[in-house]
Length: 468
Image 1: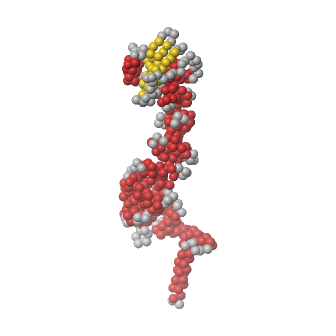
Image 2: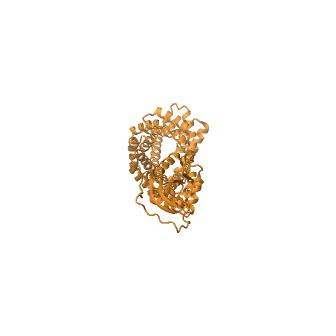
C-alpha cells in the first residue's frame, strides 16, 4: 500500500513530461493543442490569483512576464519584469540576469533607451560572459549612438560566439558609422553570407565601397538594388551621383528616372532625385525637362540649394531658343549665333567678318569691317557667356585687343551685368556695353529679322576658331 501513491505520482509525472514533449515538438493532435492553449489560460488565471494574494510571487510574475514577452506584448512584459527585477528573491530559483535582460529588450522595443540601459548594465554585471547580454548591451549603445562603446560590447559577443549573426551584422554597421570602412567590410561581407537577402547590409556595403573610393564596386551594388522597393530609390540616387562625377550625365539621368518611379520614396530622397535629375537635364540642354523637375522641388520645399535661381534663370531661357544657344550650345553653334548678331547689329550696313576667336568657351571675339551710308570702320565685338557679373578685367583685356587691331569701336555684350568698375572703365573709351536687359531683345528678334542685303560672312585668311 505504501508504494501505491508513489507509483501513481510517478505515472502522472511521466505522462506530463511525455505530453509536454509532444506539444513542444508539434507532435500532438489539433484537439490537444487546443487543450494546451486552454491550460495556458488556466495557468495564467492561476498565476493571477497567486499574485492577488502575494504581489511579490516571483514564480507567478515570471510565468506571466515570459508569456507576455513571447507574445510581443512589450508594454505589459516590461511592467512585469520591472516589478520582478525590483523585488528581493532570496532562495527563489529566478534567473535575475535573464529578468534584467528581458526588461532591457522590452524597453528597447518601447524606445525607452535610458531604462533599457539601466537593466542591461545589471544583466551584464551578473553574466559578463553571455553573448546574448553582450550583444544587447552593444545594441543599446548603438541605438544611443555611442558607436565606440557598441563596437566594444559587440566584439565581446563576437569573441564568445563568432557565428552569432546579429552581433556580426551590427558590428559591421557600427564600424561603418564610425567611418572605419576597412574594418566594417569583413563583418558586413560575412553577415551577407549568413543572410544573403538582407538588402540593408548590401546597401551599407556599397556605402563602404564608396567611402573607400571604390566607386565601381559601389555602383555594381547600387545597380543591383535599383529595383528594390525599400532601398531602390536611394540606390538610384547614389548610382546617379557616381555617374555625375564621371561626367556621364545620360547614365545619371537613367538612374534618377528609375529612382523616381519607386513608390513611397522618403521625402528627402525624392527631393534630391528631382534636383539632381533637373541639373543633369540642364547639362544635357534639355531645358523644359529640367524646369519640370526643378519646379517639383520648389513645390516640395522652398529655397532648396540653388533651385529658385535655376528655375528663374532657365524658365526665361526655355522661352528663348537663341538664349539657350548663347549660354549652353557648343562652341561652333555659339559662334554662328554671334556672327548673326554682328551681321544684323548695324541697320543697313554692309558687314565683312575678318576674324573670329573663342577664348576658353567663355567669350567670343569677332572683328568686322562695317560700311554704312554714314560711316565705315573696323569694329570688334565681344560676346560674354557668363550669366554673372562681368568685371573690369574683361573690359581691360578687350580694350587691349582693340588697340592691337586699331579698331575704331568696340561692342561688348552678354547675358550678365557689368560691374560699376567695368562701366567706369568704358566711360571715356569707344566701347559700348550691352547688358542682359538690352541683349535679350536682340536675341528674341534675331531670327525674325529680314536682312536680304546682308552678305553671308566668308571666312577671311585670318579666320580662326581656337580655344585659348
